[in-house]
Amino acid sequence: RGHHISQSQISRLLRQWGEHPIDTSPKPRLAIDGLTRQILRNEVMAVVLTDPGTASFVARFLDDQQHRQILATLAGEDTVLVIPRSVA
Image (tube, rainbow, N blue to C red):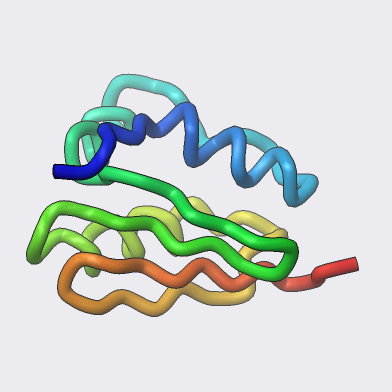
């Protein structure tokens, strides 16, 4: 299978886009631990690979964080497309 991706790695990706890290209190941390497998990105957007059937949960988690730099997420069965608000 893929690689285990932690919430801290998602936070690092968001920091690279100029956003503050995701809240690391125990409740949100437990929400996505173990569900994400890999993050792929280019200069424009990111793709989060998840366990089958969990992409919508991960996308909802990211949406609920209300990060200024995330314009939208789009979830499939095991893939989340994360679209930044700006690419500048």
